[in-house]
Amino acid sequence: MRGGEKVLDAICELYPEADIYTLVHVKGSVSERIEAHRIRCSAVQRLPNSGRLYRQYLPLFPMMVEMFDLDRYDLVISSSHCAAKSVIRGASATHVCYCHSPMRYAWDQFDSYFGVAQVGKVRSRLLRPVMAHLARWDAATAGRVDRFLANSQYVAGRIRRYYNRGSTVVHPPVDTTFYRPSPSTPPQRQPPFLIVSALVPYKRLDVAIAACRKVGARLKIVGRGPEEARLRALAADDVDFLGWRTNEEIRDLYREAAAVLLPGTEDFGMVPVEAQACGTPVVALAKGGACETVQDDVTGVLVRDDSTAAFAGGLDRVRSLKRDPEVFHAHAERFSRAHFMTSFQDAVADALAEREVPR
Image 1 (cartoon, helix red, strand yellow):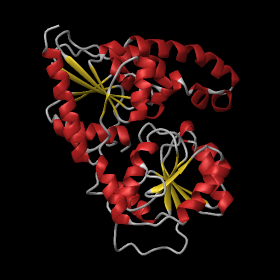
Image 2 (cartoon, one colour; image 1 turned 180 degrees about the horizontal axis):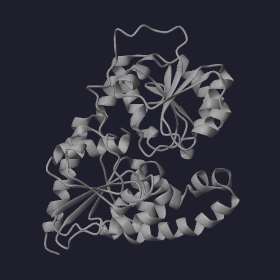
Image 3 (cartoon, helix red, strand yellow; image 1 turned 30 degrees about the horizontal axis):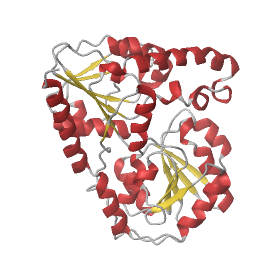
Image 4 (cartoon, rainbow, N blue to C red; image 1 turned 90 degrees about the vertical axis):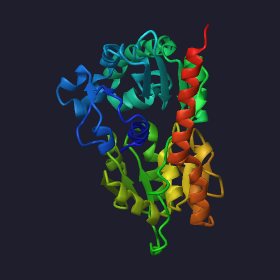
């Protein structure tokens, strides 16, 4: 599961009787804990190949989430990086939104997703007014949320900028009991670098591929996404595309890697924390959530600009970093599932109490 689903899994543990409303659900793609809930899908579910082509139906998302009937609920919790935060709750209900990010492609990253290089000149021109309309709708519906929870200080800043709202930072849950160093893992003579990521434009995986080539290092990439064909065309024989892997396989890859790479700006980024929990350093762009999760020259290397040369320099630096798995794991514990559970419950309780105060 990706980060959003891992957050949902933790929320489901806190609220085992809750109903789940979602735009699209692909059976078997999430945990048994999530699957055990009653799941209600939008009409997007019935559209052709919705599980694979859901991104193509983005313009329908606002209408779909507004059609959910939530009148009988006293508490609504949305986990949102797109449209979910704009559901319409009942008049007496409290709505707490766990915001992974205001939608990037509608606000400040249109060109990364829908620029000419990504979708062609005609489609890019047609999509620009659609995304501008979506941004206006996104801002106009921010008032439907009673309490925003941000997954990082970086996202809290985006919420202030685009929604003009404050928020409470609750870092996502990382399973630091599962992701641990392995004393039995034999060191490799020349371990590869590793990326675990959806293959989408803003992740900037092309920078990591070029940087690894520059320093003559092997790279393994776990993940799939719309950028896969383009990235394969950029890569040489020293890049292995592994597709999706099980959590156990990814844990082994973390433990065996020279470092885990994060060349793009992440809102939070659970992968770097999972890597550190396994005793592996991280090389990350010094923007976004990485500034909160990676200790420069202690648990990894923060690269100050997004050029290939700068990132290659980070790869050279991390090779000389003292690798202390126990120190790395102790740092990752700050973002454990237990911390999330406590912080999330406290934030929801505060929101409910605030709603009950006469105005």
